Image 1 (cartoon, rainbow, N blue to C red):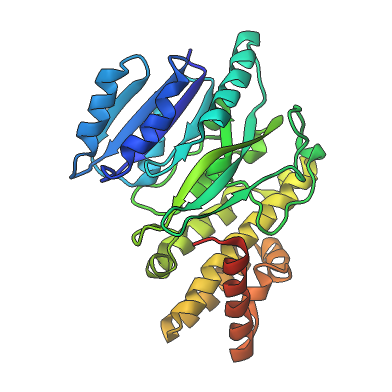
Image 2 (cartoon, rainbow, N blue to C red; image 1 turned 180 degrees about the horizontal axis):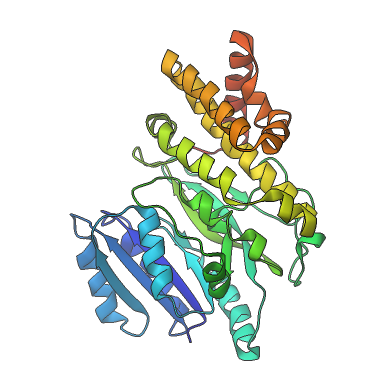
Length: 340
């Protein structure tokens, strides 16, 4: 068994795939890198095959018809042999020193035959063209270098939530959770970072700036214009997340986790609502009302919790002044937290 499987979903990634893989192959033969070429029409497949020839004990290439990012993650998880599983997008990379420290820790657990269900590391947003960066840390949320449970976590700040970039799951936890990401759908990383959490019993936080997330491409899914154009995709995933887990059952076992998960849905509702408001047309206004009505109809208890939280509730303020306050708050948050 490999210690760590890293899946790299790729679609037309020739401009940055080498940077990504160059950061991963130093992990050595205890790392399994599965490059999933998701129907690329450029040199992505050729580049991936070159790395597979150069590092045959480390790199495996899967060529498949295009199915979207979630399809690539599914393909990697289906083939994973590592004790732990991580997704690294093809335009991102791992910081070398943090990567080696992570692997040293995982090696010890593999030698002992057990380890925590979820590893959490810090990550950095890199605006390379602007030469700016913003690192998200979790020192205030989790005890450092200590196996803990959800009962031991602290309070998340507004800029802190458990995105795919921060997480390394035990592979068997992912399989136990049954998470399968929908094909031809954007923003499915939200499902990956949410649905398996109730299956996690033990956690381990390493204060390492591991994942380097590239921001700045015009076609990037987190670009504001792209988000607005793909708002129906965002709404689809928001509803899937809201309906995927019984938070009442989670609350009975892990009250703090349930609080975090409710907050996570609130953030997604806020993002969907704000980008509908930014689109600004009559159809967007109607979709905004429908989004909240759908949540109210499918899960009234969750609706009222979301409606009166500071995050998502703030995006459901009535009238023109409510819209101005919501959009103004969003613009301020973008400036403070430096997201795209």
